[in-house]
Amino acid sequence: MTEKNLYHRHLVSMEDLSPDDVLQILQTAEVMKGVSEREVKKTPTLRGRTIINFFAEPSTRTRTSFEIAGKRLSADVINISASGSSLSKGESLKDMSHNFNAMNPDLLVVRHSKAGAPAQIAKWTGRLVVNAGDGRHEHPTQSLLDLMTIRDKKGSLDGLKVSIIGDIANSRVARSNLISMRKMGMSVTACGPATMLPVQIGRMADHVTTSLEEAVEGADIIMMLRIQTERLERTVFPNVREYARLFGLNSERMKKAKKNVLVLHPGPINQGIEISPDVVAGPWSVILDQVTNGVAVRMAVLYLLLGGGLNQS
Ligand code: CP
Image 1 (cartoon, protein in one colour):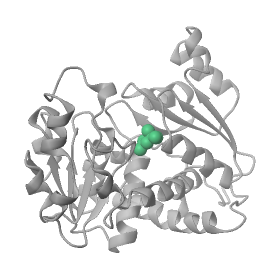
Image 2 (cartoon, protein in one colour):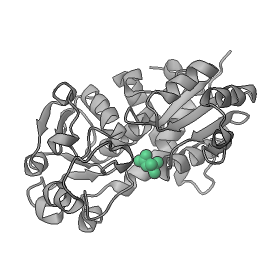
Image 3 (tube, helix red, strand yellow):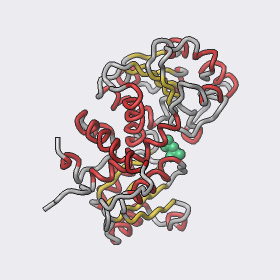
């Protein structure tokens, strides 16, 4: 396994990565975490490289961490949102992509509400593209930071039992993790109301249940998901109170969980709906570790895709 494995490849889907690729990113991310813990949090490795972060959907964690990641690697980082771009004046995504291209960036980070937009921008521009979340499709760097968090706490990934709970049909985080976790030898249970499970879930997960209690019991990892109201096309549950009653994780329900279980949530959290404040703040919660690891993973991805530190002759 060499640093060149990932050099000049897109990261659009977790299908793009082999288990060795994932391990290489996670190992590199551990080194990058060390950079973030120094007093001077910067390395010159991507000096002279230009990264455009194009976020056409709201974001707190992903956008901030990609910006921090690029800057800690000394790249020139430009952030642009849909509302602050000429898309708001009627410019098409294709025209905008060609205009980005004309400014000779090295890599584009793209978040968009339409599944497939990052792959399409990669085709139009021929530039390296990292998917920062596209519609219901995928969010690969979120999955990588989830894997890093679990591996840090558990020592390895192979053989662990994960329960992903909530609005799976509308979640790109669930989709990326269903691919990557099974690829890394983990067993994944999908849990949610039947109306929030995709029709193909039987092929995507190792086990499917509509019982929260069943999903909690025996899991090494519990990953809670927000209801993706921005992507709901119809009413899929009676009301929020009913959803919280049946599918909200609270400390009472945590009594059924393993003692050393980890609770993850990609954020943003709707406290009191899918997860109660005492679980968010409880000893199982690694939710803020996920955020810390998001910077490290994104530094690793940018570094490996752009060949930072390599003699590329
Ligand atoms: N997890 C995640 O993608 O959060 P943001 O939407 O804040 O980036």
